Amino acid sequence: QSVLTQPPSVSGAPGQRVTISCTGSSSNIGAGYDVHWYQQLPGTAPKVVTHDNTDRPSGVPDRFSASKSGTSASLAITGLQAEDEADYYCQSFDTSLRAWVFGGGTKLTVL
Amino acid sequence: QVQLQESGPGLVKPSETLSLTCAVSGYSISSGYSWGWIRQPPGKGLEWIGNIYHDGRSSHNPSLNSRVTISVDTSKNQFSLKLSSVTASDTAVYHCVKLETSGCFAYWGQGSLVTVSS
Image (cartoon, each protein chain N blue to C red):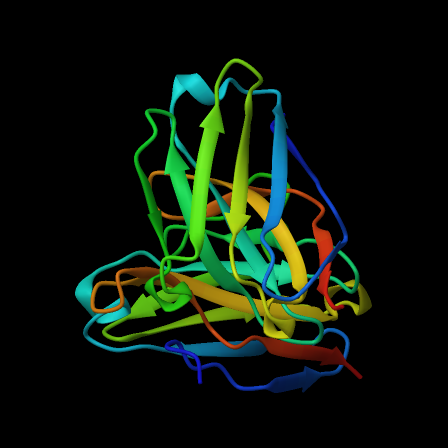
């Protein structure tokens, strides 16, 4: 059971918008720690798609955006493309566990 | 561009110690930041193992019960992981990472699969 809770799967048709939620608690996201999102394509290492709650690294399409509110965060992907099909993970710090923690991951399927 | 590359045995026997090294290029470890390890069991999610700062300070995931030792060799621009008393549940792809100040794991090695089996 992950400290950060994500839906196991989401799906959408090409061109549509999907969101992936990441629910934490007062000891991690709610405590003010930054949330970062990673995309993992099959057989590859995770790659940062957003960091520091809302920022996007250079090279990541502006179709990817993230937000944070209270004890939760979310990643939105607009204009879905086949190449977006991957596993997505949220990550933050938990002060009770004294550990960097990840969500369980969400598999995005582009229909 | 920062690049990280893991190396080490792909097979470790139960109860023995897993050892991996991460070679860093494109950035001098002695200049700062934190460097760490994350693992991913086959078909499962990501787990933070621990990290070390350029000055040698380190921290690790309490769930690993002090089996973790992370060290840094600034002369070789590399850092290492040792995980003792391994069991089959330690079978995973092990990634070395560079940790930004905000806590974002900004750079990842491609990963090294380590199987624990007799």
